[in-house]
Image 1 (cartoon, helix red, strand yellow):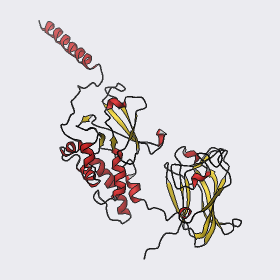
Image 2: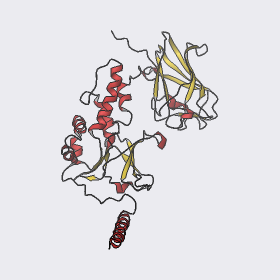
Image 3: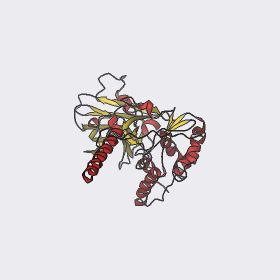
Length: 370
């Protein structure tokens, strides 16, 4: 009898084990949960005290509450932790510079507006709309800023793509190349309100997609002499498509980081600007272009001249690296002479035989504070 009981016990155990394995197929397959909220998106955020308080504060400050109440949108909802990480990082840097702390209530609203609206998308996008292999292109509710979303599945129980669905949500940095994008992930997804789908950003994401600290600690360069005085630009070599090509030299002078000067067969070249009126330059800027970091300038010098024939070197750089795309670097120089001509001699790019640069400017001296 004892043997019989033991035999049936083992059979029962293995039978239950087989049923359990058959039930989930060996991978994560949760029962679908209804995620619906009977109300608008702003009311949904308000219904979660202790979760979205910081987001609500920014929404109210930017006067976006009517959008969250009435417009058909997709909200990638930021939690308190997302803002806390950003504020902590910012104030750690400000502390090192002996500057007073900043908070969501005091931050420059222009920067806050462009960053928060990246998370509010025109139109309703549930995960079903993100099934395409390349994901879906999105447009922010203000400024037409391009974002991107793609459905992904995590690994679970040792099975690839056997885990829960998440969304890879990306700031495209206005680049068509994914390597330049900054991507975060969602936790909860497909929360449906009366006017929106809400996807909740993971707690480890830092609000602003890496721009929060850099934008709020950035000191802009002095006025651009090319724009305030005007003059005539020239170059040693032009783009192979000629002066009217879409990547011609003229675009290195236009003050627009989204255009660029591209030069093939590169072995050094110069760009030059003749001002309408001689002026003292106290700084200059270079801005990296949209793609391929190996094309960036790395060695160069800046020169000034009264007649376009005799030149004085004002600054020299070697081994400079642009860490990001569309990155403007400001170089202060010790100069008190008003020159008519300014020339940028680019001696070397990072690698290869193609050079590119989004923009170059020569700038007035910094104003001296009394």
